[in-house]
Image (tube, rainbow, N blue to C red):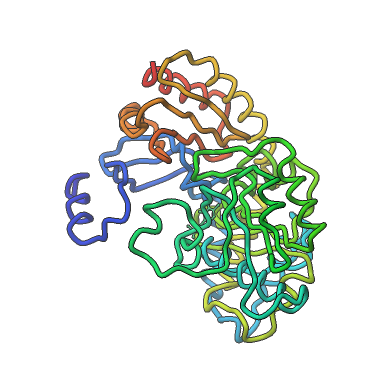
Length: 395
Ligand SMILES: *Cc1c(COP(=O)(O)O)cnc(C)c1O
């Protein structure tokens, strides 16, 4: 079968909730993807940062194969020997006391929302059903009914009401607005340290520290969604580490799987996740031995190959090169680590199509922004190769 045959099947029998580029991938290795016609592409999206370690990393594949041959699922009705080891690894990378594994990112966000509310009632003594969670405009925290309840994206919400109450929205990066929004019933402030889906939006310096201080002062949980920004993408293990803050909870996902198998987690101080009792939250697949073995290998690759450092170093290099580009079509180039948004003065999609023809896979976000987020194992000469193509297409 050829590209068009696969696309026809997909269009006929699948729901149309995505608008993918018309390339059908059959194989991936490191930073490279190969389509069904044998054409090779540099992956500049890395599955929205789920494959920071590169495609089909041999060490993660080995761990997965080994675990698949032994045990894949027990449910949490019984214990398995991989889960405690993952808990310890998560503690080691974050210093957060305890954690709770889930599968998709959105599920981990839901978990954080539930735990924040429970903490609000049990510890902060908020009156029943009155807990509020403050979030930011242009946030992206996933697609479940509750999570889209506090989205500000028309497409994410239209037709999906009624929505879950209990959320307040402030402008991203505005500490004064946060201060105004906090009430005695505020349980948590949930925020992305850098907004990825919104187009790689970096808040003003000092915003996170100010927000953290306000949360501390008002006994409000400071919860960071690092599902996309974390695990090396922004040039540090966690993007919040650019400022002096100590989050009460951090949500991770995406690269925790190395792209192999969905694994997410909420990491928190003991008194936060500590409010859960047996039976109050769970997931059949959350914490399964296969997912845990994969996550442990994925974290080990991040550390052994110093991918956060590579992201920081090459991210700065690449951002500076992109800033040299002279074109009236470029509105702004911004980023942190190998996580860069090129904002155009016109629609980005046609440029993504042209880059595809040049052998580079990128995706537009928010109409006018092209996100550059290659696997973090990329090397300098490969970035130079990509830069030449970007220059050709933009100029
Ligand atoms: C991708 C993402 C999510 C949702 O993760 P899924 O695995 O798609 O459910 C939540 N928050 C942020 C910041 C993300 O980038």
